[in-house]
Length: 218
Image (cartoon, rainbow, N blue to C red; front, side, top):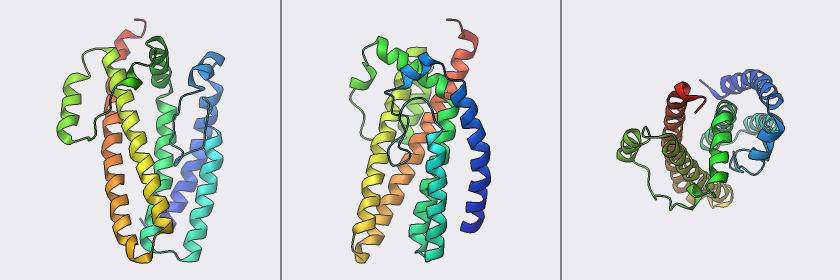
């Protein structure tokens, strides 16, 4: 798919996503909004958003698409254009995941509140490997509390990786042309790490839904 086709596809998806976001926001109760008020559901490199309502993200996506079109018209390099497209795609993925996992986020936030945020005090591991992902697959099925601990751990890893991507992007925008290739390679490597981390997050979220489906009232 070329960049023009990608932009057209993103515009079409945005209209559908806007309706999903409106339905999501209307379904949130006052209690839900209070629980989500201080939860950072997105890294700043994705969305500037606070609270439980997600509609402000739609306007930000519209702005991102307009900026991408301007970049195309300006004839920027393929590498920089690819990075811009990847950032927009990341925003779509993050917003869709936020819609589909609000119930999980609410319960996780309630558990964090009840346990005085013990989960957030655990020291995060420094790497995420395929072997580690296999370990998660064996361990997270033991009980609901452990599932949510594992989810929060990976969400914290995701934030660290996203912060590093933001730093590299800022470096790319300001570095000398002779340094751009090295920075672009580092940026690509971090995007790959982010992808692996998100695979683990999606895996854990799927297991939570499977685990709790027969225990809705427990």
